[in-house]
Image (cartoon, rainbow over all chains, first blue to last red; front, side):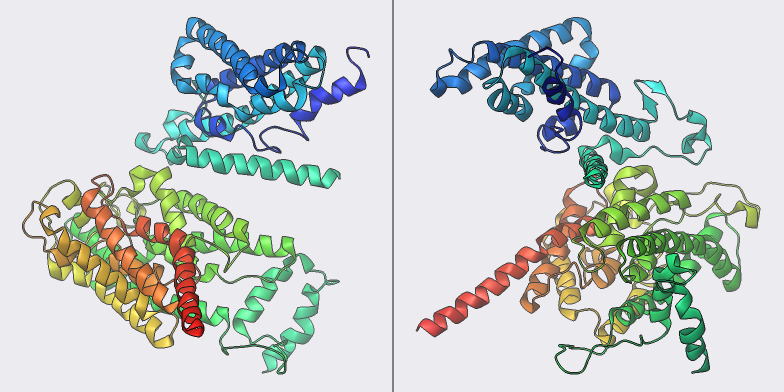
Length: 210
Length: 385
């Protein structure tokens, strides 16, 4: 089977849209609510999960025939934990401020349902290259939703994007304007509602295509 | 009924399936059934109608009951304004000032809410649902006077969509729509709503009066929360001539509304009464806790803030409150308790009525379930004896 065959393409693009881990499978919601109050942590988190899912998938896929079935969860956890530690240290070394903002949520990637789900459902049955594509696809599918939610929340909640001011401060009420930032956007409760809207939009588009 | 015949024969077909104006069907239908008794009523045999009154007339009664609060709120806005800027004015000019300040809020709230309702009804090909008649009147009454119109519009849209339409529209909502609007304002724009400083309308209307000054005055609850002496006396809190959200200040106006609601049978006296019992009990128990001011008696808690307004108009909402008769006592009692608990024990929230009612909205089905289940168990025991 060639590297970029049609099946492999479907493995990669499926999680981006019709099989999206957040919008369709509703996995990984906890971190999606916690880290999306600003765009930058959302992007970093999405990329971290992508990297970890991809390589955990590859490693588990490579050793899938040697893992005893009864202890496979422990093996998976060890692999994921090792990867998470590496990523966490890299973040601390290169983007320290984001790492502080993400706080425990990088470590909690270990418990992210998307990871376990992909390892159990895909990597244990498929070869390393397909598993890699599947991991990247699922990670990016997760990242896309995070970026959308983070975009809305940062723009409406604090008027900035990636730290740059988008809504000029002259329109704010304390400076004589009429506009006020929506404080609820910075709370996780609003993230849940935005996420629900994303899922709503996603489903109504896909239902139409059927 | 010449007009009705004319409308039935000439105007109505325009809005039907093949008519020119069919995209406004829900709008026409809404106004038509609001003004007239619909032509199609249920068949006599096989129907299970309990009451001749339909939900549009029920809603109308609540709106009528709200009018004293609205009118008094308008007067109070003018009164507070002229007191704040230190001018004297006669009754009419105070009232007109308030009218000009309050009416835009009413219009915005109705326009946004009904707009969404009509759109959804048209889209789902359903009849227009009339639940927003009351919510649209409640919303302007529970916001501070200086709340900008666009914020009211955003909050109303949020509440109607996410507290009502996603649950299936009127009658299906878990939370009181007007209170969700206020909760949204409270959490999203806390500087507008915190209650420690509900501004008296100073600068907002300067195009009319020509005075430019941002006067602010604290509500009694805000003063308690920040440990100051309460500046309003008991008579003010009962007549309502004090700063606060537009419709909530006057106990007298709310009492008139309550009488209308009870007389027409729309609201339940059990809920209303037990809210006051619960509130009074908690206020009495936490007497030492209340304030260090000395001039604020425990029972005054029942007259300030949104307590009365919430008890009469919000807690008795037939959709979101408990429906069993025993459940109404429990539901109301807990609302009163929690409202005063939040006020006295949590310094972050000077007013607890909104949070108490929203919280109990969640528990109302559970209360009903327990009451019904208890009754079933009791009867089962009796049958097995």
